[in-house]
Length: 230
Image (cartoon, rainbow, N blue to C red; front, side, top):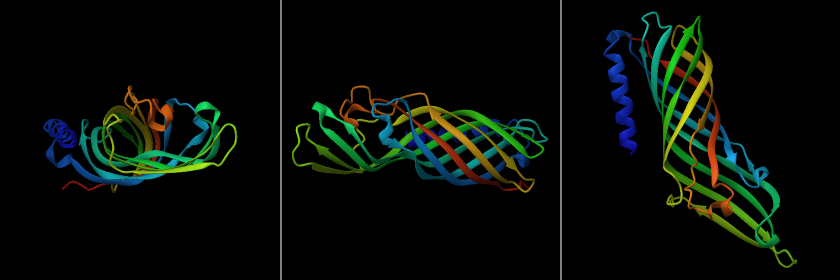
């Protein structure tokens, strides 16, 4: 599936390039950070907090209008999303008190295909995005205190491989604004969200079912550079 996403983006860029002059197509690089969390109907929502993750990859800018005002820009990005569990106590099963600490990192291959408007350096961009889950790293410590008192118990999770309860394919969207200089250097602020839940509908045990209706959500700040065409 990961290869399929890369091939699909490459074919789309190639098709768009065929309608433009080859010398106007520009290859570029992007790197920055995600400020991510979860959206949707989330139980015990106050225990899930924002986290910062890396994003970076490549892009291809294909002019639709020759003066660069309107263009198509597919990208292939490695993107770290997820959430942080700050120490917050809540009521768990059978009235027991629970407290979670740690964070969960989901590594994705994101393939946005953006329609980009550039006017006097200002950039407005939006489009659909396909995401493929590469890995999940759950580093969470849960402390449980029995409802009737007693000795608290602690369980630590460091599961880096089990993706069976998660949806690995995701459809979403991306929109943003920014500034792009004549030399191709740009600064972008973006928001990306998902249309679908990332936990499978029949998975009632992942974080005690809190995230059964959760979707990824992230603000992005990134630098880009489009290499000048010859």
